[in-house]
Image 1 (cartoon, rainbow, N blue to C red):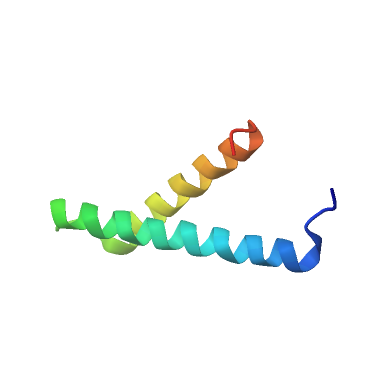
Image 2: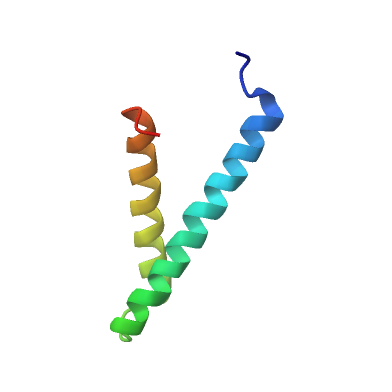
Length: 64
């Protein structure tokens, strides 16, 4: 089995970033609806970091 290669890793990184930031934005938007006084950009940063960290842990422990 061959490795992904440079193009494969680039595609993987782009999909990872879209998933992380898109998922973070969606969760921030939903949470902002519950708590309108909170700043969207801070919620977006929080949820993006949590999603990215969970994905890294899943890969590190071989769950994904």
